[in-house]
Length: 273
Image (tube, rainbow, N blue to C red):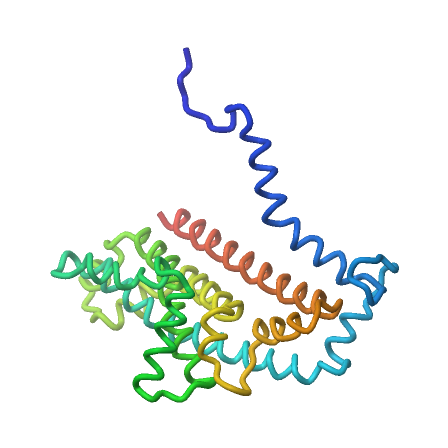
């Protein structure tokens, strides 16, 4: 008798899977559908229209949304760059550094922002900034996002580095290449899919973050998530659905791009081997 474990053959698995998918993605689909609703009411369907997408760029709140989008994208780009550089250095040290004292503690420290609840991180960051007298604003958001994004950038970079045979670097050093040239001309070209994937993931995490940003943004500073939350507190409007849909589609596009870059890197490595 075949005793191969296959969870798909268990009774009820398909139904539970469908239920989870509906709960997870049903609200997102509803928001996307009603962002094309021509009616001012969010409950009554008035036909298909793009008026609320035009409202984002030309309406009364367009200036606020544009300023918030600029803050979100500029902070996300800078946080992703810095966190990716730190994550790359950490991955090389952890994976190529051999066994060293405190390696497990270092890995735990890198992974800590993922394991700690985000609300706890937000409160702790706010208390820390207040204690040292750090002014809340764009810079405080950038610092907090950089620290929070490091483990998310580290994961795809370390996974990529683990799949690279150390013989490539050993061969370069046998040909009298120093460590910098070995990294620049040998390791970096093979690692770049993981680095790009880590950058895109860190960018998305920073762009979509609300809890930490809302705690430490200071007065007068808004990002897209906090601007959307501020508008929703005054009532859910169709233009908020349109803005949320644009942000969702942009995030999906970047995650998809990150996935294909990672798959391309794996295919190139298999070809080289």
